[in-house]
Amino acid sequence: MKNSARIILAGIALFAGSAVAQNYPDGKPVRILVGYAPGGGTDTTARMIAQALGELWGSNVLVENRPGAAGNIATEFTAKANPDGYTLVFCNIGSHAITPARFTGRLTYDPVADFAFPVFIGGLPNVFMVHPSLPFRTLQQYSAYAKKYPGKLNFGSSGVGASPHLSIEYWKTLAGINIVHVPYKGAALALADVMSGHMESSVGNLAGGPLGAIKAGRVRALAVTSAERNAQVPDVPTFAESGVEGYDVTGWYGLCTQSKVPQPILAKLNADGNKVLSGPLKKRLEDQGITVAKSATPAQFAAHVKSEIAKWTKVVKDANLQTDR
Image (cartoon, rainbow, N blue to C red; front, side, top):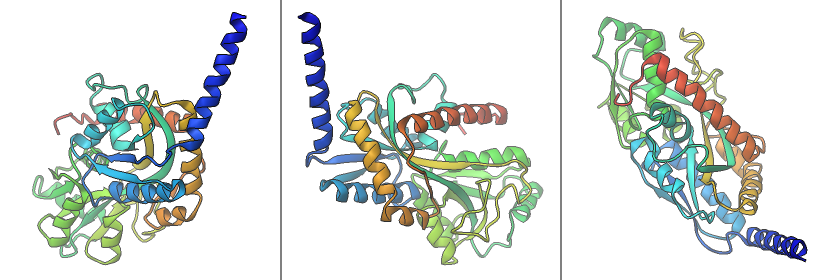
């Protein structure tokens, strides 16, 4: 009888969990935390995802910006949030690969064990840009000037330790150049200063403001960080093509949440996330320079995150990219 009772109770629990998932989000608002200021590529993409999911669910999906510490503020909050599926974080290479690599053993959460990875959105490059008035038309020309005049050139980014920043620090170590990093509270702010001529150069995710600024001629793109050229800016060479042999930094976006969120809800998030990514949203994201993932499972996404942490741990160590840089 006891075994029968357990089986019945387990069945009831499973049925209840499935029912909750089918109704999720049941008209309640879902929030997506973004660890960066409004206006950058991360924020822009998060708002596209939020809109698409909101339309699918018939429910409000709110984007909440919590900038600071290279995305760590939003990530830490999510790790400790109520595991009910109503708090998601727009996770990316910075929050879940580079930050763990830079602060190994010093975070208040485990970037893998404390998270579930229901929606892998896709990958995209960073792009290195200069003001059009500068004489540099190639990355080689910029690098040659930086070698001749160390410390004279500046570059802005979304903040210390984020993917754009470290992609350039990585290049600096490989190329043997010294350009000064100027951290901002968001990629849009760094881009604005380059467009206005207050900053010589900046780096940011191609998606969002940089792509529009490049196409409008308000900045000159010297190189993208990915291994291959991007379809949205086919005339912009890669770092590897520009003489930085073997260089490849490809960023990525996803939706993550607390690891203890019930499995039926995680499964629904995965199914619904893949559904909107295969619809009209796909072209909108691709138009921003994002290569959309093909219906990745949470396990595949988690495996990608683990491999990225391993990669960036080695990069940080080999390049001596200190946590205070």
